[in-house]
Image (cartoon, rainbow, N blue to C red; front, side):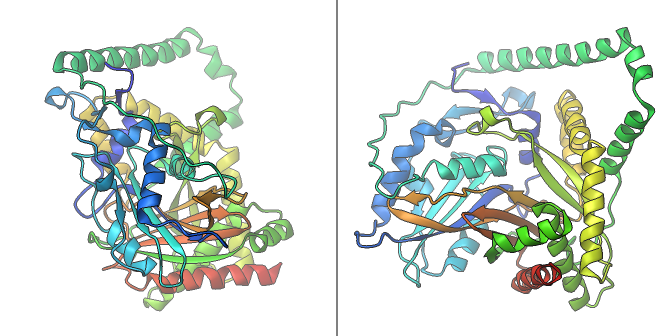
Length: 457
């Protein structure tokens, strides 16, 4: 195959599997920029040219999916000979950021084209610039999405414009070449699996010599990973294609103050605030608050892989004690749960499960992917995606806010994402408009729940 052609990994392929007409598996963001002070503000055409000039840094953005012959393996990426930047970077149809986000995120990406899109509002109603983007989860995880978005940014407002490179698509591989690549990959995977198994068989003492506590921890980690959840309305109901991204932000110093007071992590504070917000949601819906099983993605991306596409993630499951009325006790319980999960190796256990599944035949991988994405495995995703801590600029416009949109699988009406932009945290509450049309109230509850924790600190 040509060097630019890559077959999807088992994990990347799983995000195609769980996508449906109502569950769009794109990772998204909504960013807000201040126009340059004293200099002419860039218009849409200038911003589109800026984005186009940076695409040579991320060749995958000019590639589309190509199905395996007879569906015997995962699709691969091939250069899109008909690539047209105007199909992917489009002017927003509104000056209201909420309308731009909801319109963009409610539309499924066309699999016949490269799986990304950006909409630019070069003048929002408040005079700022809005950029809304999405890329399919089979292309990027949350960390990679941030890295790719940062390709459009510069650390100084006066960075020189790039001319861009002349791009020539490579020839699409023929059927025989794709089949040969699939066979070679499957052979390599089977060899890796055989080596791992033979290592245990030839050295059984490795198992006998393992400390009992370590063995028990590993079993506990797998049990926590696979323990079923109980679907909870309105979080786990059939969803529609319509989306809304509720937004909230506050100073990072507030979360750090709570972190220092209770010797917790910022992520613990964030999860405790989310638990308080979800407790209020359930009570307002006339339901008794119950514990919720939350999937928390964990990056396993090495420092040298920061600009590589595809998914390098594992996950751990954390119980949110929404039934607990006291904010401090909620935080303490989450501290204990995340501490046990990390010490018990939950992210490693989940990664091992994903790797073993990846060695199986594709029909089995599809079945497992749908099972793992079911509301009987978790109630919602709560994700913390690191963002740039230093000032960043796009054509002289300073990035001020960025709100993540974490994709929803079928049966999940809400996900919560957080990212950090300089000294502020930005919360994105991504919801199905039919099931959770009042998600903006949940965003308000998240702010109130954070205030409650800050008051304790």
